[in-house]
Length: 187
Image (cartoon, rainbow, N blue to C red; front, side, top):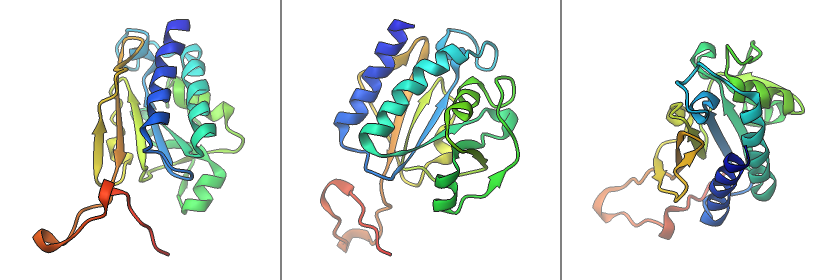
């Protein structure tokens, strides 16, 4: 577990130094604790592994001000665990289920127990995310997703992929775009 903590801490550190995350953004986490343990996805879930990963994701939240969303497994249609306040603020529709290790996955089940007021929502459009064990978080990211190539590519035995999003480029060859693809949002 100490090696896993170091690996996930390294991933979080890379996110923190990347400059991609901004206060209030929505960060999606998909995680197969089975894959982290070196087993096939959905076969050997572990809330002990989930606890290690959760602690580091909580650090990411505290240091950046992002809102977290933990993706459930396919048995709950990849719904997401979010805080009720996040769901209300973003106008997300709540669905009725409680993730458990065998239906939702150990990571989602663990996060549901840790959140202050957890709810499940069917879909979101996250600003960035982390996929541990190839859990397919892309369906929950805004267009356009930009894959990130961090140095730390594994958490335990699971491959790790990160992505951020950027606004769509529109307008054709005469258009001009802001430097660094940072979006400006208007009310």
